[in-house]
Image 1 (cartoon, one colour):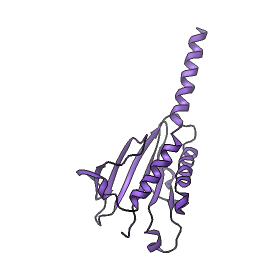
Image 2 (cartoon, helix red, strand yellow):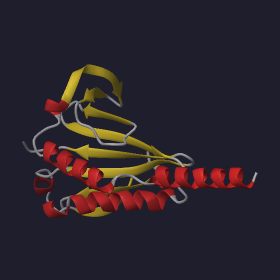
Image 3 (cartoon, rainbow, N blue to C red):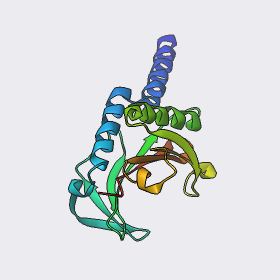
Image 4 (cartoon, one colour):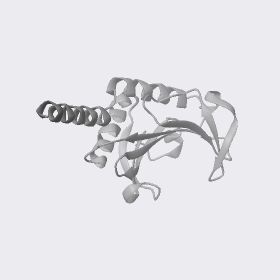
Amino acid sequence: MRSFFILAVALAFSNISLSQSMDSDQFKTDIIELYNAGMKSFKSFKEGESYAEENGNKLYKTTLTLNEAKTVFISEDSEHNYKFVAHYSMKNVRDPKAKLNEISALMLEATAEFGLEKNNRTDMKYVGYQKQVIEFPADNIDDMGKHTSFEIGLTDDGNPMSFEIVVTEILWK
């Protein structure tokens, strides 16, 4: 009976630690690849015809991936601007907001060479109406539009926690 209890506790701890972590190096590599792809256009990464519409935007399957993401797709708006969207889900996270901060810090670390900075913004679609934005710091939209930008927001802070990463390609091509 004692060995069964020890085995159950060991399995529970290994499950918790596995579900709360992601491969940081692979994630940062993926973020750099997305930044570079966004500096050209996500259009070339669309796969097939649009499969759905959401808020007037067409959604496409994509050849781009983010490891460990639950779903990924490309969104095209009416002006033919593209965004890459990835959804994640993680179980047994004790503090979802802290985990989100940890992931956004990885994104900022990966994009440091491009001069991006992190800011908080309001967005009603996320928990607490907050999202984190990693973008080129400029007062001029023309300067900002020459760089790929990232958004990350918590979509569910329960168990599992869920969050979304949105990568916006450059506006001025």
